[in-house]
Image (tube, rainbow, N blue to C red; front, top):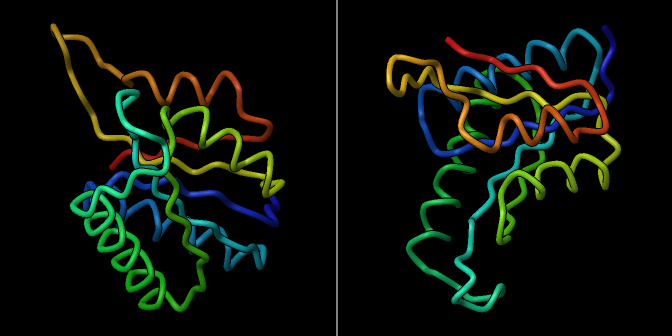
Length: 139
C-alpha cells in the first residue's frame, strides 16, 4: 500500500505514542509519505473553546516535542499540530478530511472492562467516519 499523507493522532501515552510514531515513520519511508502528528485538547462545554488551559497546553506541547524527537531518531520528518475542540473523534476525522490524508494510524492500548476488550468512544467513531483507511496499532 502506498500512502502519501499519514495522520497520527497521539494521546500522551508514552509507549503507545512512541511505537505508533515509529510505525508511521516506517510506513512513510517506504512510500515517501508526509506525516502529520496531532494532539487534541478536549475543552469542556462549560468553558469557551478558545480558553487557554496552561497545564493542558504545556502537557500537549511536551507530548508533541517528544513526537518530534522520536521521529528525528527514526530519521523521519513530521509536522505537528495542537488543536482544541469539544470532541476528539470528530476533530480527528475533520483533520483527515482537511489534510486529505490517505491513512489514519492510531495507537490503541489494550483495555479490558468487565472482562471484555474495549476501544472507548474515539476509535469506533474514527473507524466509522474516516474518509480514508485506518490502521489501529497495538503493541
